[in-house]
Length: 420
Image 1 (cartoon, rainbow, N blue to C red):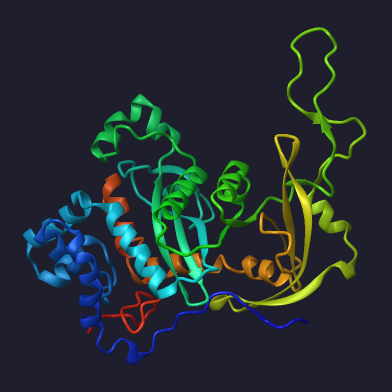
Image 2: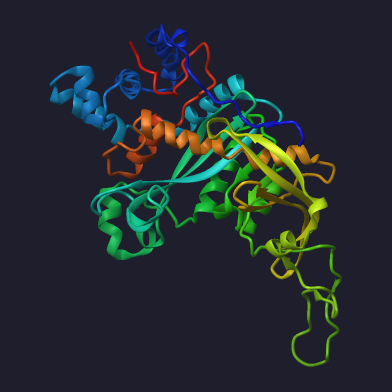
């Protein structure tokens, strides 16, 4: 058994860390306050943040307004307008958030975490709502689907950005035109898959150059998209992507060539496998064929999920791109010692990357999953009642985009994180 491999520290607040929370809340808001153009936006921004940190059971707009302002319908309407229609400069605020994340959590080996989170909804009027697979309940349901980008390091974790997924019919079908208008969906919006939305966020973070990043980890919903993986690699990041068990790879790079022209029809220009070259094999077949002495056992510390003991193999292989050999990659296999569950990953990390680094990456995704759980349980991430496209993004920003490494400043996580 090798030594335990740590991933991201679990964040647990102590009473001494929240004794002066209201003062810290004001200091935190002061970082972003100048980025709002209007005084009213600055004031309601502080109140909304205070409401998200309160101990009220439901943190949608009306309960927050009533808790902070009493039975004042004008205050509730003002807060609703701030969230649903407030036209602040989103990119400017996010860029400042990324700078703060780098200051508190940033390190050269920083990790971007890409994942989806879904939100059950009633009715058909909310932007992007549809009966579709909902991860929250593990089956098809009426919901909105979000794509989120997080950050993790040896100092902690947080969320960075978010995008609402709009199903194709919502974007392109005339039958949805009235709903798009009511929800304020931008007129020039085009359909984007979840991996495309993920890449849009990754690219924004990379272009901003505000945050130190080396890795990106994602589940197979994103890892199966080879276009996304190639974009990540071209951006200079090392991806560590879970992939389906039927993903195919070559043990060694096969020989390819442009076929000799037969003299009839179009002249061949695209390379093909040379006859007799081996076919690519599935990673699950590879895992089953490896002898026991190829595996090594490691214990991964996964924060709130606790330690996990698993056997690992990492092999340099050749990825498949449109039936032809693509980039050299690591194929990483992880088999749970107790359950036998197999996880398969691809990574474009350099050939000299130590196995311990790859093992650590296999345990990094718990941080964004924990962020979703904490935000929905404590910060109202699932309580919003706005229907608009803008409102969804601004509710998700208010309850989800927070810096959990801000100590002794405010850390927005944990059941005990309540204003006095």
